[in-house]
Length: 263
Length: 207
Image 1 (tube, rainbow over the protein chains, first blue to last red):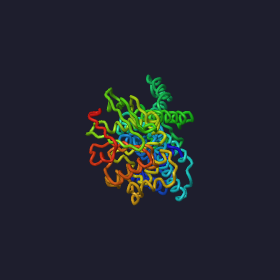
Image 2 (cartoon, each protein chain N blue to C red):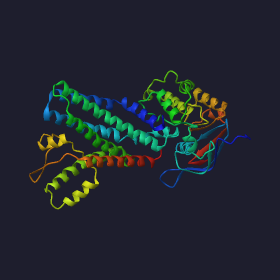
Image 3 (cartoon, each protein chain N blue to C red):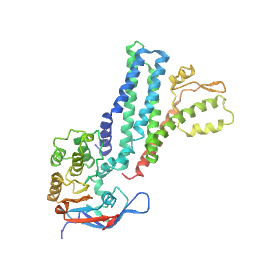
Image 4 (cartoon, rainbow over the protein chains, first blue to last red):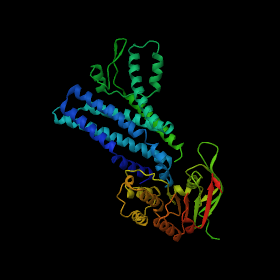
């Protein structure tokens, strides 16, 4: 097994013993199971989506922002570097382990929701499964953005940057939808440019339907401009790929940010 | 004079901060032959840790330097240097045995039993299953020593070692197999009696 794999396994072991990670996994799973057992239809989907998005955002920031900086500054990476690991080895391993941990937590929550739905007699929810996968993609973007930014500006500012990316990605999609419906006048061309340059939120068909029915709750509140309701469409494949490309960009930024520091 | 090439030879060696023009260490000449050990002493911020980091290749450096036959960094990448950092820079959730095994694997050492032997040598035989965050300072320093000692490296770099029977046992074992050692400490204590040479640093330069 290579150095990256050994470092990855060590960090996964560390995360699996970290109390807040365990607590987040358990509390989120309990909530989604509860919603699966007690709610149905739009209520069930809205509540589970809220846990996935807001709880997942907190986990993504908690895993991502300190991923590269805290152990760099405490000397842990110096210990690894003194044993032959390079900054790239450490960076790849760290980001991979954090991404795996985030996916594991979100998948656990999603499975708990499906189990609740199944036990309550509502059956499995394919729309929710797709929504969970797309939410994971956006939260990976946030994790990588926070990790990369933290190498340049510190943990707290890195977390704020991750949050800004999350909000910006959603805003870009909402405003593009508004522009496409002719609800924005002069700024439409600028919004087009922003849409094609900035990372985008990946809106699932389930969330688009909830939002259109004004059932989106805090995750997808209905957007109005001058009294006109903005219909935010579900993301298409190009947005899924675009967001993946931004994940790659932030991954590169994070590795670069670590390499420019001393281990 | 030994017929073998020196383990470490530094001439006009300097270690730089990644940012800023001022060198953390400068004008260092140093020679460590096979089986020898050297003590680097100096106060806080005198450049001891920076010197070790330069030898490891973890910090930018200049001058004439040969470490186990390579430029600084080469022998580190090959896993031939055992490094014991100062303080307790450990992932606290890992167990002692897991950390030492991780370091062994990062250094590419395959020998079965190496971790168990090292824990025994460093007085950690009964502490292998303990989490690093739960160790008191004495055992944390032993864990750091074990990270350096595992796999019988050709060169030991010990930053702020404790003068303990375990440290002396590791140094004796290194000397017996022809390995070298560089110890850096602000508190030399009885170490000068166990080493072959001493270098004093003051404000980044030999005093």
